[in-house]
Amino acid sequence: MKYTCVAVVMPFVATTGSNVYGQLGRRTSEQRSNSFCIVELDADITHVSCGQFHTVALTTGHRLIGWGRNSEGQLGFSSDVPSIQEPELLLSPEWSIGKVCCGEAFTMFLTLDGEVYVFGAGSCGQLGQGASSVSSLVPLQVHLSEAICEIFCGARSCFALSVSGNVFAWGESVSGIFGSPYVTTPLVLQPTKLSLGPQKTRITSIAASDSFAVYITSTCDAVVSGNNAQGQLVGVESSSTMSWRQLKIPHCIRHIACGTNHLVALLANGRVVHSGASSLSSSKGGTFQSIAIDRCCGVAAGRNRSFFLQSDGGLMCCGKNKDGQLGLASFSDAQIITPVMLPHGHHAVAVACGGRHTAVLLNCENSERDGDADKGIMNLIPMEDETLSDDEPLRSMRTVSFGRWDEDISSVSFYRAPSFKVGSPNPGVESQHAGSSSGHTPSSQHGSSRDDGDYDAFLLAKAVIAITVVVVVAGGLGWIAGKRWSSRKS
Image (cartoon, rainbow, N blue to C red; front, side, top):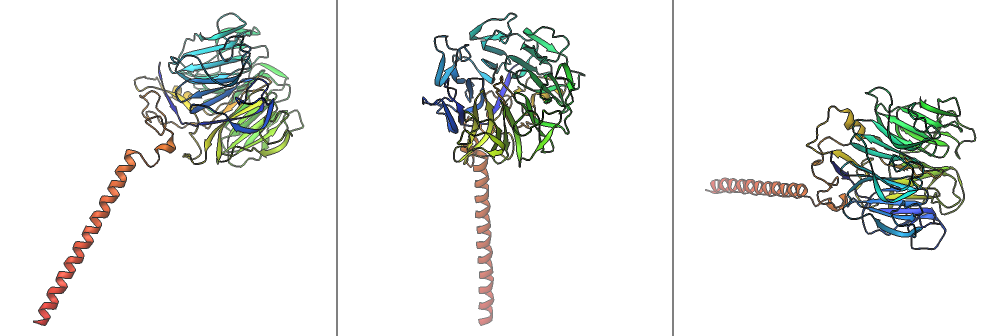
């Protein structure tokens, strides 16, 4: 099955935090930074993801650009290149990539043809080849029995979501992160289908840390599995669970993200809640606590930190900040919700958390912003000639925003939830970008489309007709008045 790639361009990526391995992508020798600065890239970006010490961005041309540590080949370079200090193009031109996500020391991507590939570290089975291996510098295809529409990463585990709503998983499972009774080994070396309840309750999104995972269902509920040492899996009474348990959350979930030992979620009613050990709570958890965030439309979590995206483009945060990973222009921790200092004139669209660095996808202030949604997200939708059995696969693809986390490290990405209408816009045209038929940004199209020109011409014609009518009527009235005046004089 082939897919159409629908995206809105967000041309700017900014980074902050630790730069020991060049994971900030800057031309600098500084070991850390406490302010978000824009990375110099020669392409427009639709998505960004972080591993523990590396960063990867997806371009509008379906290419990958990466920088940071390469010790396991997670950037695709040979072992004699331990790190990349500046952004470099990854892979050869023939690759057409629709989605990318990063684990602790590996990179996984989904092509526009619906194929899954992984490169980098493989000692825990992350490469999905049926055996553990040290690493791979070239992308290895993960052979799956169903068409895939979404991919997610934990620190050393991988997840693939099929069009029909089934979940395939492989990699490290020692903590019970996969939650399946069929997984009995600490390493799952090849993709294994997870059984997650009745057919009508399908998985639409997954958020994972290094030791626990949250599976969001089509009913906006969630099941959880894995480590629960800090009580982050509310509803699970033990310190861990090897099988799925219902997450006891007070409302339907809109977005959710996993940190090292905490969860943060945006609910459908607009409330933000958190559980587990974080800077906002001194208790060990076991319950969800509310957080007051105005106009929140997305959440992200990393190692001992959380981010909250606002509908006006603002970004709030809390947590540890030793390496400046919060972007507060200081290295002090944020014990309360604190506004992030973004580059002047830019709005936050998405956040990706690495080990001790953070990347933000930005939209410029003068770019067109279409309300509260559909910005900065790339989704794969079936092409027009594909047929589906029912609405459920479509629902699974139009997933709510998702969180990804890598390691103690964390690599969570969040995006606003898409709201596609089936068959629009032009789903049969590959590489079509929402709001543009030529690949330009929506702002460059504003006021210059053919529809706008036709409408302006229509208004001009109406004005000319109206003026003509007024002139004719005035002339007629003048002629009648003249005739009457002449008759009176005679």
